[in-house]
Image (cartoon, rainbow, N blue to C red; front, top):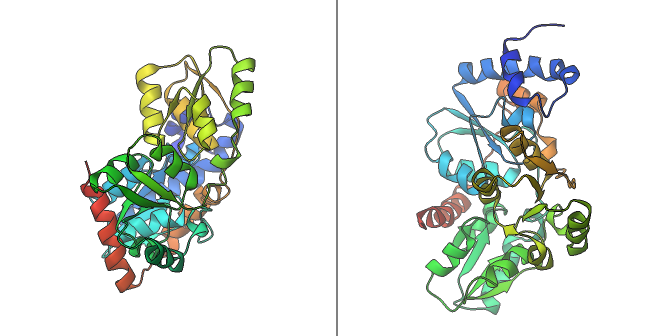
Length: 323
């Protein structure tokens, strides 16, 4: 079997990647590690990326909020965003002078596709004076029409920081409804849904408990409210990771994208992870092969109209100022 310098990384991911599959990854990993040095590049990877990306080539990993915060401090010339397009746009908003690459232009998001700038403008007309809080899972053009952004991890704090009686929260209906249940602020919702999280059901949770006695159920707030009502804990991917690290539940299920469980299980091999698998087809468009190609060719570069970027950046920066 061909030997690669990256073989030392295999021990980290051996619980998730069979030994027979490793040679298919190792060549690209070696090339990517070398290209990062040559290009003065960093790779930001979302928690939903596969283990060979998340654990072997990424420099910064986390949820949308963590990646947004870390993007502000990147000193490299090139940022490769191993995630979906709105995340790459956010990195570009916060680093306008840097080259930001998305390995596959088709890595989109059902939430981002569920609303347009025109929709936001019509909502302003319908609810004059009501602040618009926009989830980061949106295009830069939608962010530009908003007052402030939020993530699943800081949505409540953002809404309550505005000091108003009601807000419009876009575009995830379930996230907005779940946050509304935690705050006295009235939340006006939109009808966007995440195609991964909307598929989980309360019945599925009850079946998991029946089939796996003692299981601890952790859910993402993009799931329907009735799913969260059946769960033991709900939170962003960062909050879910923190819960596992602190509580160490012997048997656990994460109601979110599949690779999240794979990545956390690598860190905690003594815990049993039950995996009802809902894949994000957009996240899975990012591969070692197209990350390597992006670094070799500097494709595909993320660009944002200057006027849109200035207004969208303001909405993101306002979010980052909320503690």
